[in-house]
Image: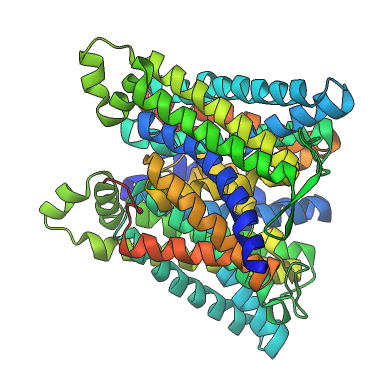
Amino acid sequence: MASFFTSRLFFVSLALVIIAATLPLYVSGYVLGLLTVAFYFGVFAMAWDLLFGFAGEVNFGPTFLIGVGAYTAGILNAQFGWSVYLCIVLGALASVVAGLVLALPALRVRGPYFGLTTLVAVLMLQNFIVVFADLTGGEIGLTIPDVITINAGANYWIALGFMTISAAILYGLSQSPIGLVLQASGQDPVQAGALGFNIVKHKLAAFIVSAFFSGLSGALLVFYFGTASVGTVVDVAVGVNVIVSAVLGGRRTVLGAALGAIFLIVAGEFLRPTGELATFIVSAVALLVVLFFPGGFLGAALSREARS
Amino acid sequence: MRAFQILIDGFAISALYALGATGFTLIFGVSGVLNLSHGAIMVAAAVAAWAAASVLGVGTYAGALIGVGVALLTAFLTYFAVVKPIQDSRRIPTEEKEIFVLTGTLLWGIMIQELIAYFFTNNAKTVLPIVEGVVEILGVRTPKNEIFTAIVCCLVIALLWLLVNRTRTGKAVLAASMNPRGVTLLGLELTNIYIVVWGIYGILAGIAGVLLGMFLGVSSYSVGPLTASAFSIVVLGGLGSVSGSLIAAFVVGYLETLTAYLVSPAYRTIPALLLLVFVMYIRPQGLLGRR
């Protein structure tokens, strides 16, 4: 762990965060708004990477955890008028409960079967939101009366700070002994169990941590947008973006996932002039990375450093 | 009266689901690939058939053939451009190939979907039906097209059964799904078997797509739901088990039709999803699956 603070990765990350923190001084509110969303997305992708890259669980439904957190916070605020901060905390806790629900099948089934369960969880949540439209706003979305702040710079700093702290915790966790046990149990659960590690406990912990950060980020995003809708926090397409971000940035690197998410959102915005082809181009680039640089951005950079 | 209507409509939908899911499960059974571009290939077939018949005016039969041809081409392209490079790659660890194939085919499916939306817009398209008109069966006014759909689906599935169980190629495919290494030891080239399977898959997905286009109509938005329904039918029946998929297709098809008629069309997909979750908990390998 101590070697991390002298490694090149640490200094590069530190420099990037410092540069990012000064951005509100000289870029427009439009760019800040874009990056704010990208940072929350980065946390989604990092939380997903902890489950997939380390615990080895193919979670096709990151938006189940995100959506439960986002909608819990949104509904408590919009329908019951509870304070913003309480709602955010309760949203994150609801997400942890959702994570435990998702962890139950994960302890029984593996690979594609578990992947499908998570996909079904998303579809169920989506149906639930549409059916209980009185409570959730249905397909139109839920309008939320309160926001944290309307200042673009402050929102940006909150998002940046939140992403940095989450990244530090998730990365630290992934490099800790717990992360190593998780990695071992993801790759060979039988052998890891034979070495005396409690796999069930570690996997549950991974689900809880991943769900906590997904839900917290989802709740914060809802209070930034001022709305919660299926299209922004629950839809399978959003989940696909989270997965693509993590794979693009480099799975099993945690930090790479955040880079991938920022790249994906900024690239999508740059390609907006190409109209409907934007999604096509982003998907094509992602496919090429998957085919030719399976390690992702950070994976490729780190392996080059390791070689030299 | 209503019971007959549910029986008839449910049968047509189920037969269509069965046809769509059979190819999907065949590929998984033989090569362990879950092809998440499945919905995109079906929609590509339907849109090609629509464009050929309605825009170019080549006639309904030629249009349907072109649709199936496009699906076949897309299936081969999926295999050679996406799946095979990942399977052959040395840089991807073996235990992670599964997730890479899933991610790769998912991205590929999105690319096809976006191209269709770009060139043919997002509007729903209905392929001109091969047979038109309605008949009364047991007091239910049924479009002839619906009967045609059900008959073609059953015929194609029967043909597939004959192909797999009665021909040499089919037996090789069956053997590969049971024990790939054993097949290689007997001197059969595994890649050739994969190509045959992807060909069969392309034709099945193409026929299912064109029929779906005639029966219900498709748009580029149908891609995700189509993949999801094929995926859940196949898992419900047991991954890789063709007969399991057939049973599951009818269970899901009738469950959806019943819900749509008796409760509300808005809740159509919910009971099938609940059933799926339930089966996953008590029998994770599906109805007829092997672990």
